[in-house]
Length: 94
Image (cartoon, rainbow, N blue to C red):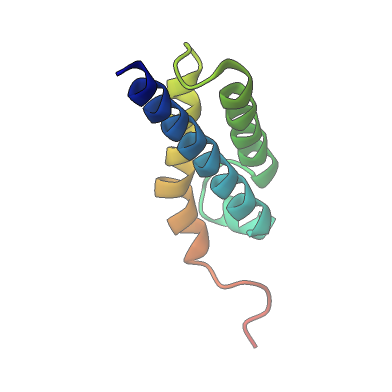
């Protein structure tokens, strides 16, 4: 049973790191003015938040006092900020 628990926690940890990585790469590819146009935090602020979340997950793990807030930060970006920023056209529209 101990082996199953460890495998489950490892899978959740790698999933949380993948989530933070996906959020970071997505934020990196979005235009900076789209963040301001939608009324969200700036692009460098979100990149910093997501990068810190990924670092906290990597260093302290998922089952730490900073693990859950790190996952929540990545989820907030992907659920709230990404759809708003993605809805705006990129670059020149002509």
